[in-house]
Image (cartoon, rainbow, N blue to C red; front, side):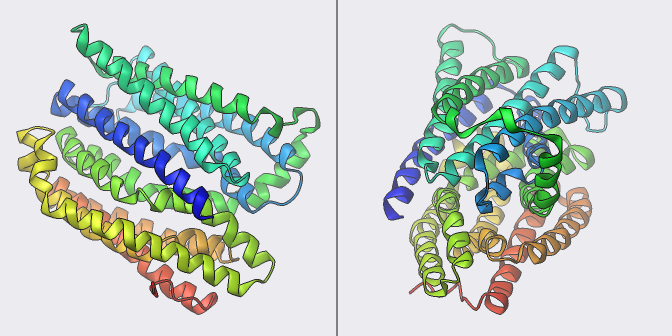
Length: 411
């Protein structure tokens, strides 16, 4: 388990470094409002992905039946649902302009829909790699290659003095995503068997995955929904001033994300085998790793915040400083509690986690509505950190009560 985690951590570290450079390059190439539009669309993509997957990716991790049949139905379903939902979203924005400042042309609508489709398929392929205990290979194919290609193409624009605009940025992202998806699909093509796919079996999968769908949506919404609320109740500049710190703070999850990929199947296996000692051992391993890697990184970021934000420009240094520090506080709590969401879902408490996530969503929306209008991006950061702390602290208490584990006992 440690070897797999280390490999995935290495892949994630390289991906995070490339992703940070991509964000920095795009921010320096676009003005603040254009950057706000770019990050707003990425937030919309993040919110739509779990809807299109319908919980099938998370259900796959726990499923122990005909994996090829589930994968084949799921990839077809994800393709259809992502096309339908993304086109519907673009049409609604075109006619009703729900989000301030986001103009949808036909070419832009096609680009956004294609990016959503590519990301949804990539997300499910990542779940397949996770199920097969090859999460680090999936990360290399799906994320690392995409980031590397995106960065090379952005540098190509810069070296040739080609002006980067929103459509060009998303064209680059789409091209890189498609290449990475093709490579990752070819590597695991034997994980599919489309000949036995039927609507009846597919509906049975969807019926069982609906709880995971709710949990996936609600878990994703906290970071993805707030920029959308900012665009609705605030300004595009607020979206940019919120999104840049959010991207940087995400680097502190460097260990948490790959760790989730590795320990989630172990949680499920130990729980199904009624191996409480093994479950406790995996939980302790997860908690220690999160604490040792994430907490020092968060503290370093807090005390070097001026240097970090200064890289993006003086406007971000001025308007995003407090936003960044407030987010780091919420992320500190998130890192110290570890993989509590996956632990609840893989140990038979997915309904409890869903209910908790619904309550957390209401808290996020209500607090964001008032705080954004009062404090703009800073208000959004306060709502983000509070909801992040709330869901993790309550999850710790639920795990203690239902599973009998104290996830805060690191040593």
